[in-house]
Every structure is written in structure tokens, then in C-alpha cells.
Image (cartoon, rainbow, N blue to C red; front, top):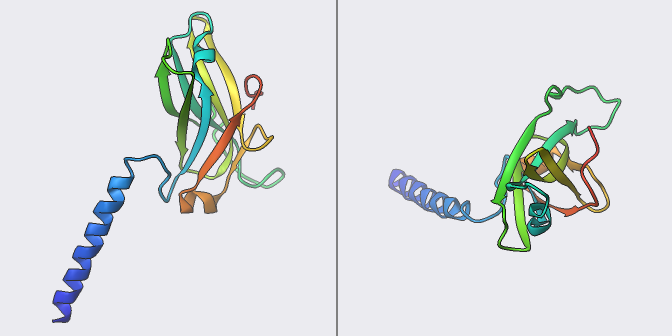
Length: 157
């Protein structure tokens, strides 16, 4: 009889898991990742001469612990994660764009318009910061961090 109850509980767990997976189709981070979300002025970036697309991306520029803490990150090239993208010309003024990172560290978030001669970017960060700190605890919890646009591109790492 206990075995039957355990199976029934397992079935309930599977049903809950199925219900959980249906919510992964909607925006929001899941445990093991952090979602960085910002309002991007797509029309402004698409207005750059020769712009073909706008992407929202994050570049890992440092470790969770500030210097002089010992740590190693990939630097040649830096680790970069590309999130949402929109093609130009844009049909909407602002778009909520997101990029998902799966490791703790210090990240620069940037909306970039790809142009004929390279790209034009606009930096994003939380509060007044240009760098977004993602902690190991936030990754484990599946946190969403809102980032706001800054004036101009992100500084070189």
C-alpha cells in the first residue's frame, strides 16, 4: 500500500514538474541561471546608419569577488552571452529584452546595433552601476535582475 502511495506522490510530482515546465515558456529565470532584463529603445539603435539588427548581450568582465581576490575568467576573448534580438527597421519604440547568464561574476550588459562598419552599443546596469554583479546565490535561486540604460556604450573591460 505504501508503494502505491509513493507512486501516487511521484505522479503528483511529475504533474507539478509538467506545470513548472509550462511556466518556463514565460519570461523568468529558473534555478541555475540569472536573467538580466532591460527596456531597450530599439528604434533609436536601429536609427544608426547601416543598422541591421539589435541584440542584448552580457560580457563577463570579472569575478564575483572584487580584486584582489584570486580568480580566473576567460579574457581573450571575454565570455559573451547573446540574448534577445530584433531586426531593423524596428516596429516598436521600446522592447523588453533579456539575456540569461549561468555563472556568477561581474557582467557588462549592452544593447548593440549591428552596422555595416561594426556596432553601436548602449550600456545597461542596475541602479547607477555600469557593471552588474551576479552572485552564486542569485544563480542558484534563479533570480531576475532589472538593468537600466546608460548614456553611451560600455567602457572597455
